[in-house]
Structure formats: structure tokens, C-alpha cells
Length: 553
Image (cartoon, rainbow, N blue to C red; front, side):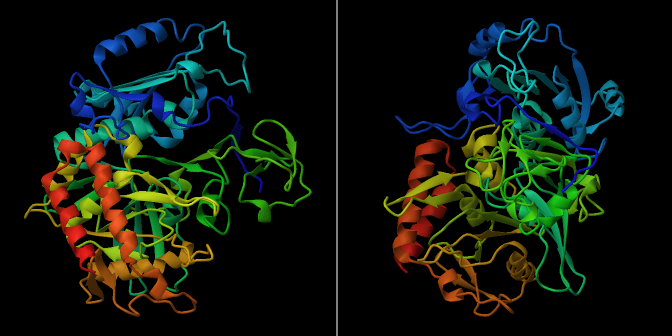
């Protein structure tokens, strides 16, 4: 793989990922930002800091923080410039990596100044790597940073973000998670729309009927792979609108319309290859900023997952600058290494991906990595049940055989690290959108990751997921191909096209009672501990109803 007009950046090994423990929302009242967690429980749905504490932290960091460095001013738009669903910001930074990455990930334009002149609200974004010259910390990979002092702060009341100490990704490209999710979710609550951690895709069946889907998955559950799916069924077409963030608003006709506020993809490189995601590989083959991947002797890139695509005798330089060959110990690329590439280059980007009015959403999908118990797909009974399913979203990793039990990672609505305000209020906001003037999309849950007793995947996934999407589209059209179960509406036998596959559909859709009794108990405990008195009554009732249905299985 040779890559044209691209750049490989290696960071200081101490600055390689988002730092959730140093990420805060600043509001005068604590419970505007975080729910009332149960006594003795550490909240995981956002972190609050009071304004006076921030003033102390600011005084220790920001005075003189850019000394000796150029200060860049970046006027940018999230969404098409001037669009009705778009928002604008201005970022100050002392990092050239941030400037170049923001030019890929957002729409940087001098026309932002005239919008500000006209009184358009803008988000103030201040970023510094926290390394004034002369630097005192040892410089690694020519990547100045201040990892011991990282602090990422959001001020939703003031429409402001301040980030210090890290040059990496979500910590420094402030249009992305900081603005497009944490600040935007709060603006969305005030203005009556949704800012969500969701892909947006279009699927067109062989008859030429197109549907748009928004889908939320926790990290490492294949969001980008789904957004850029290569369908295995003949005659189907998938087009990508966005792979990470969706801003959605009901239009005057009551249809939910979505835009992708970003202009690029900031994708995890390891695991991406010509089998798992050929579209992503083609997209990042030019005009791309790579971060912390490995480099081949011929000037190409390499990461784990590309072993079948690179000659095993090739000399490779790891992300740490060491000589390496496929088969050697250790990893060549950092597990969180990235490609930052313009969305317009994606060969299956939708012609309407920059339509300022957005695309109409027909279905919302939630999904997680659930090795046992959870069927391939089910439809929620109604919008309220769908919100309850989203609130209970989680991934599980089964421990190695010698250890009993499993590791459960809750990621409600796939928004756990990105909540901009009290999660109970957020759930209530979702519930409030269901009104007679709105055409509510159907809500579904999928699980590509169920294992059999031998630990092998029951479902082939990837391009074969179009078979599940086909069933979802037919349900949106009202086809009678679903039957009720205690957890939702399941596909009727043979309603999913399995032509050419050898799969045990009985095992894929089985509902082990013991598993579900424990699952609903665990969900309830999680929400009572983490959201407490802020949990909407409708969600409490949904959990009670679910418990009763499972008890009667």
C-alpha cells in the first residue's frame, strides 16, 4: 500500500488517546451536568467541576501557555456553512497538527467571520498543548505536550471549550467530541433536537427503494464498518452519510432529518483492511493524516489487521520508531492509531451528504458486543421501549476460560463518554420528542457478535449484515414478518434471507431465560446506581414491564 499526499505523525507515547478522567463539564449547579448517583457509587455518565475550582486550575495552566509558539485561529463550521442544522465555532490553538486535522474534519472557511458579524452564535474553542518555549520536558517524536497537566473543560452555559496539555485527537480537535457531542447535546436539548454518537447510512434495495438509518454502537463494535458496508446480497447499494456523529431535527412535516456535522473520518486504523472495510481503505489512500501507525520501507503504512496485505519480509518501522517485521513480538501500530481523511473522498459517499436540510431517518439502530443471550436483531415495541433499550446499551467481554464471569461495559445510547448534561434529563428529552406531530422512526437492536459454545461467531457479519438491514427495511414498510417476544419483536422464521449461508438461526435467536433474568436485573441496578432519582418514570416502568415479561417466559 502506497499512500499519496499523506503524512504520518508520531506522537509522544504519553499522548495517544482521549483522556476521560481529565474531561469535565463546568456548570454552577452540579446536577445540571451529572445525575444523582447512589451513595458510594462513582458516576460514569460525565464529570462535573465547579467554576471556582476551574479558575484555580486555569490560573495554574493558561497564563503564558503559548509563549514562543505561533497561535493559529481556525474559523470552522460543523455541517455545511450557513445550513439550518449547522453550527459554527472558532478555535485558537498552538498546534499545527490540530490546524491540519481540523481542515480535514470540519469546514474551515473565512465566510464564518461574516456569519459572526451577522450575530450568529459561535462556540469559543481554546486549545494549547501546554508547552511554552523554552520547553522543559524531554521532547519525544517532536511532539510537544504536557500529559501530566491535561485538562479538557466544557462550559455549556457560555458555549465555550478550553483544552490544555494534549495535542491528540478528541482532546485537541475541539469540533469533534467536545463541540459536536458534549456542547451540541446541551444546545440540542434547549432547541429541541438531538446530537448523537451515530453513523448515518443509506440503503437501497434491488427495487430502487432507499431508506436512511442512524445507528449507535459503543466503541469497537463496527460503526465505521457498517457505515461503509459492502453488501453481500446482489442488487443492494449502501451509501455513507457519516460514520460517527449525527445531528437530527424534526422538520416542519414531522420527519426526523439528520446531517453529519463533520467533514472527515477520524477512524481507528488497526483492524481495518480490505476484508473488514475495503471502502475505508480506499478512502484513506490519499490526502490523509495518519497518526501512530507503522511505516513500511517503501513509504506505505501498516497496522495490525494488514498482515495479509503486506509481504512478510517487508521492513517496517513501528509507531515507536523501532525496526520490526510481521511475526515479531509486540505491535507495530498503537491500538488507537488513526487515519484522518476527507469524507468527500469516500467512494460511496452519498450525493446528499452535504445537503443542509439533512436526510430523512427511517430507522434508528442500537447495538453492542453481546457474546451470549442477545439475538441477532429485534424491533422495539415502540419509541419509549426503544429509549429504554438505548439506555441499557452495553458491551460484554467474556473472561478467559479459567475465570468465571464476564466484564460488562455500559455505554448508554453509546454516549457514556460524551454526555453534555444530566443523563436523566437527556433520556427525558428523548421521550418528549414522541408527540403526534412527529413521525417517529422505528427503533431496533442488533448484535453481530453472538458466540457459540466453542467461542466462534454464529453470524458472519460485515457485508452479510445487509441481510438484517433488509429485514429492518421491510419492517419499516410495515411487512408482517415479526412476532412478539418478551424482549421485542423478533423476525418470523425464514424472514431473514440466509441464501448461501450456513447459520444456526435457532441458536442466533434463542432467548435463555436465566441470561435475561440476570440482564434486566443488572440493567436496573446500573440505572438506579448511575441515574438514580433523575431516571424518568417511563423508563422505570419499561424495566418493570420487561422484568414481568421475562419472568413469564
